[in-house]
Length: 115
Image (tube, rainbow, N blue to C red; front, side, top):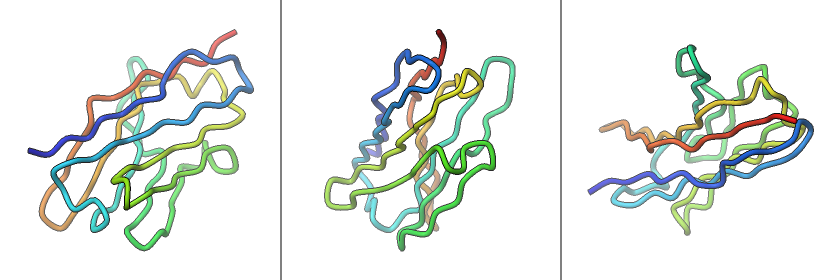
């Protein structure tokens, strides 16, 4: 079975930092493009960042310069380093793994940015 498990979410002050992790199992993670998406209350799920198997990255304009996506294929784990967090970053963050065959999603982890 395939599983993506997010962790690292929580409550942080504006301007703070947080690192999210996405542990993958049951797939050849190194062959997948992985990404982070987020869904704020009352809004649709939007792309935050993606990283290909070759390491090419793509970011939403709203997080450029603040967030960094990375991956460790040996550990089958993806990461999202979030710095200079803003209240508008508050959302449930979801990990995604995409291959030529399938799309997989984690259950999400809550990130709340508030003073």
